[in-house]
Length: 579
Image (tube, rainbow, N blue to C red; front, top):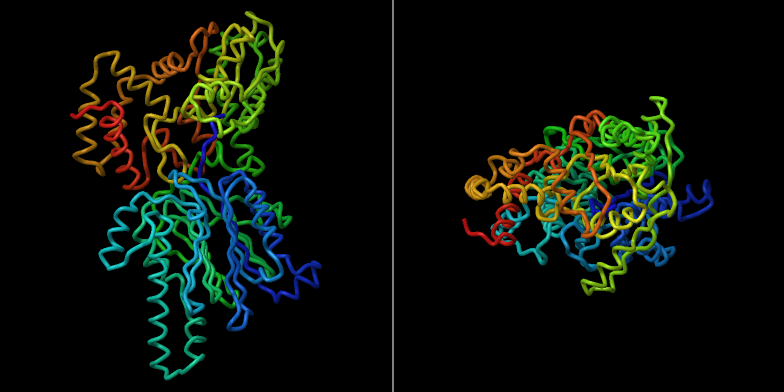
């Protein structure tokens, strides 16, 4: 319902045959570029603020361009950049990226891929990724202490500079070896390009970073890689045969574009890198030791395409598991209950929810009660006008239930800020005059910010956190805020102290307060909130245990430090207290 900007999408292709092979077999010299376009369009859900592509041509003679890049901003960026490509934009290595900003930084400067130029092919580096680093301050200090001066303060540019620096050192190591072998001229260059080992560069670079990431890159001399963070927070999948190696953020995208089965495609493991050498040889290398597996559960609930075989079933289970609390909320009166969902991402959970009732031999009444009508126009910036427009983003089907007699159960995939519920959904549903609105979330209560690539980094934006603070203040428990504040300042990396804020309250107490805070003035219909349980989440998505936004159990020290810092900022800047 509330669009979350989130982790980006990546796509890479390495052609393993001579370029004329694809012309003969597939009838086009743009085979690689066309496949890259499809991989990116099929992942458009992962980024609509900008897109970029890059290419390396291993056959380009000296004096001609061999490393190309195109970038654009906006929702039509994919179309725009591929329109710009002509026959010169051809090669064996292709990289694509779709961007959603999670830092608030915008502009073409921040659109991937990032390119570091050099007069030696092996020292040219192009990077893109799906990542957010939590310790960028420390890495920046490390770089500057060595005498470097990054042009831009941001994790993407700092990653580029640090990895570029290590790539330079790798090339210099090989140059020294070439000198020992008494090589001269182009033989030195050839020796360096043939012996570059990106695993050395990755090990020496990524050991400095804390965060969730899939990092993709290629060099001007033809090295290519994709690496996943040691906790497995961000996803990456790959496929290889004798013609191509393909990497993408989502499995069904590769399946569709290359007409494959799910079993044909493999998942990159935590701390692992898929390396493709200049000659096309591929290998998997464990770059960093795998840590506690923390694959993001929000991928399964919300972000990834529901067309994935496993994700589809998981989302259905998330809905089905909510049957019993929904039954209690409608007082067991299923015959006078209308079931619906918030379009569009909650649709699969809705199927699971209604299937659950059918399995108990209930006749289920289904209606499309809510329609997503228009998108909020960003050129309207005045508060009153903007709020009025937001109230009309959704519309209802009039006459879809019997007023004052039917319960209305409506499911969404998550409730994050609550703004859309307050400004739009509750207002328009109240016009139907249901006996009761049962608002269902297929995910648990979102209590904590994310720092690994999802756009929810401020505590005060989360309606559940605001509800807990309101309960604390109502019950005269302000000392808990003071104690938590001091713990966050004194021991910011020891544990997530913000978890203390929720300890005095039951889930139901917080639910009731959320409803009270989100009810629009004048609304008549009673509202009940039903959330997924943590146990239900892990039962539905057993292979994606990362749940820090629900439980506060961050997998890395950087995440713990940042949530404690967020609470300090909240107390000082929002509550304006000096404790």
